[in-house]
Length: 354
Image 1 (cartoon, rainbow, N blue to C red):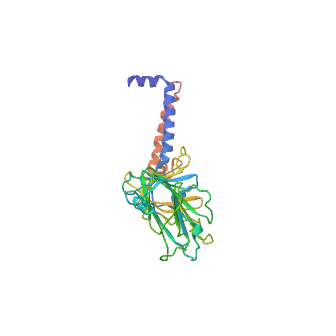
Image 2: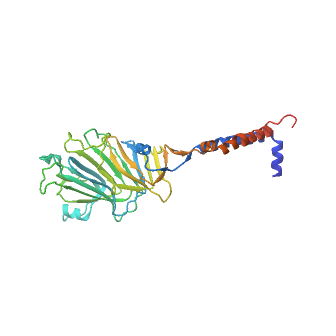
Image 3: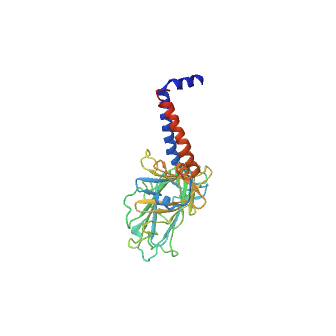
């Protein structure tokens, strides 16, 4: 300590470097003190306006979604004029569906499976349609879902074509149940009734009006929805979104939500994190647009930190709070600043007599 004091008195250069360092540290403290991330209360309109993932450019990623074995992750119940189809990657039929459709044959290995509509067989004699129901659950023997990703990759969606969502549950196994029901018993002439199953390169198989169960082993699930009659819209709202697909039982909870770029090196455009490690964020109202996916973030009593492009979006300004406090403002203006200036003048710019 004695040597340091001697060096301080002897070296003017060292004292000036120390003074510059003090000002640099003060500037950094002012900056960081003005940008302290703060948790906001959910939901918030400004945040929901940002929760969109553009087609082929961005993806919605939910971290640690709360989906127990056997619980719904995504569901859809069709209604009038809606025709649903889907493609599954790395998928198999469950034992019951395998025996029903391919009795006496060996189980088929994982393949690309399509649940499709044979549109040529539909005569559409009624204004109604057959209604398809799709339920996506975490398989009972599956590992927990680390992340669930939602995105669009088909550029042909337009004003009256279709809406799409692709679901990727990572390495977890998902169970899919699909069934298409006629609004009138025994009638098969309604649009969307005649469904086919396409497994790999095998010829398509016509399906009865019975539930089909499939397992996706770490593959993607691609859902398409289009109107049976293009002249009648199935889209809702001013943005023409399709909102019949639901998270879980209408909501899904997770520890974090991100809107990420297709380029992995780019910081997430939106990053919403639960305020505490044990908290979760509620997500609802998945909206399928022609060029983007949208959702609603949070419910009352939930709090979250929000980042955009790597920077905190909502901040607490400690410096502004200090400036608005009359006692602290007086202390800085009348005491600390003059004292700091006197210290710098004495130590860094001594007079020739010192």
